[in-house]
Length: 352
Image (cartoon, rainbow, N blue to C red; front, side, top):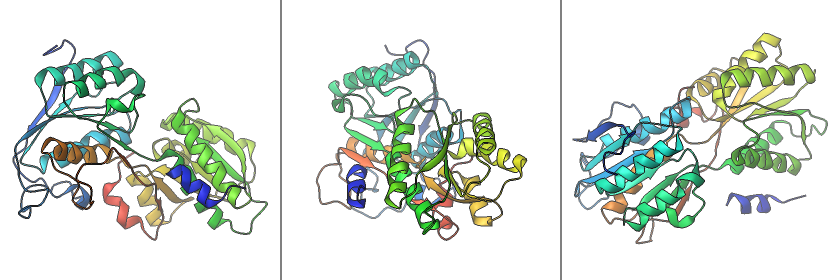
């Protein structure tokens, strides 16, 4: 049996054809319209000598995949909100795309334009590595978000969620809720099985369950879509007549999962979600269904990256650290959200 310590060890071409710069936010001050205190701050009212005090204007290029689901849409929206709060940040957002060659051309344009920093959530980390290396070699710091490059030299800072940690958090929560139930039936609805992120989540889940003597009795895989979630959940419910707990990896596909559960008229189990959507959290808060908790995979990673990019471009460090340089890697925690703490997380959640 692996120990908790062992688990924690794991936790540990100018105007290039095809590029559309859809947003040029020459920011002029705070925007507090998001209603999200965690995305506020910025230069207005900043204390003298603080990191938020207005400095030289910096130009940040931003590129991410297409906003084809709620989590990804929130990535770009949160980045824009944070950039808008700084009077010294000019954010250039390229059109979201799942075309690798188009995303490469977007970064090429940022390089040719001589931006001060680039925030890049690549559609394919390996495919975008060479152009990120080119930016770094040109003296432009790259902040890699969520999907890692395959060469650490391609980014000055990497900001990541914790897929393995999500599985661990979900497993530990289910262990606590099923304490003493050695015969409990635990099921899992994964995302796309071929993706390393799904494999990491499942590995963490299985290892956390093993800590309390449980295992995954029934497992299906979906595809992060509503339709895929409903189809996978229907298959699971038909195969398993009695279930005590289910972990669904993703709240976007969870919309379909919940529809399948309702259609089947099943409620003998509790459901734990993944990623942390606002609608999932509202259901948890209301306590009106089988959804009892969700595990956060922050959709604010790019917002954090905008702040880091500004610090790097202005030769500043992170105020709460002793270090005189911004760290090389920042990995975000995967907390479990329940009815007891949902108010802490609801404002930073995305809409599925």
